[in-house]
Image (cartoon, rainbow, N blue to C red; front, side, top):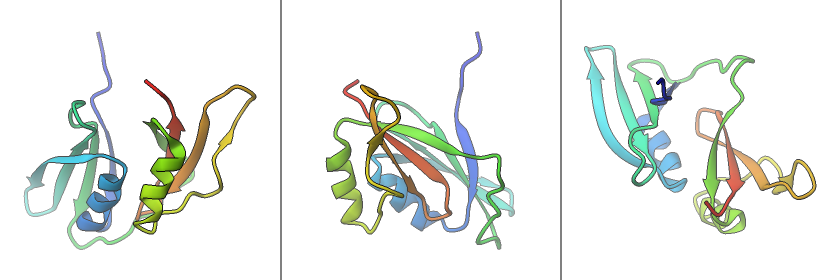
Length: 125
């Protein structure tokens, strides 16, 4: 049976991105050089393994995001507490938390240092 191993995208600054994802609860698990061209930084949430691969190509500090990418989603037990922690590090939501439908989960979006959207979804699981 197939399973999703990880998601990867390119970043402009390793330290800036690792700090951002650290604020979301990710841990840096390892760095893997790719010859003299780049380095992959693998991150994961506690106990979940390397689910996010960030690739930094040497000499490139930004990328066009394109129109196809939308977001990755992360569950948080308390969205307001998560936003308070993020605000202390200068990370603000695109707009206040909201529900897509009545009775649905509370959610909001933040952007990482390279402009990628991250959806925070309040969930108790």
